[in-house]
Image (cartoon, rainbow, N blue to C red):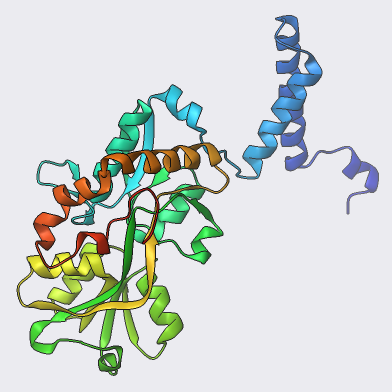
Length: 309
């Protein structure tokens, strides 16, 4: 057994690491002080603070000014949720959300850099600052608002359920003994788990996988935003949206890192400004009307100036 004196004479591995870090900081402080870059005390304080932040895994969201200086704004969008966010055959991002994203970047004087996301990653991507903004058909909920900050809305939405026309699901009661497909991290998943826990859910990470499961007969129906299932059914003969509106009407809005007021304020100003040119109605005409035709009233979906009617 080692004596106390012997233990005192040796540094633990952690102790050596801490000592080395302190010595490195002090050395850097001395160099900066000699170079006239500030006092050694300031250097030590700043370096120690940075080290503590890194140690804790903390990171700061980029401010609006930092985004401007970088020349690029990172925007999270869907790649598999046509006609709202998708990648076309040429590898180009398209859709209702993407048109808005490009306009946000254009008016800010920067380039839009798109980051592919799925429903479950929208909050984590903001929390980790992988993106500056999420524009991925993001429904506003109280639970999400505790983790991210939402800007003003630009769409209205509720849930819908699509199923094979030959076995159309027209009510929640008809789901008894059936399997309902949902995508993880969506309001459909939350709604059914909370309000209809007896409904058997089959969950997928990606929208494309969820739709493929429906096409392959692995589930009896699929639920997500009514705007999205209506569009999908139009492009897939043999499928019907038997439930066109379920649960409360919600809004869809851009989201930013919690507390990133400069970016959220810019987005709000942009949404208000774009109302003067009916931007979102024009966006609808370009991206959604070719899909919905006369089956959907534009004012049942579009929100201008953040004002929900």
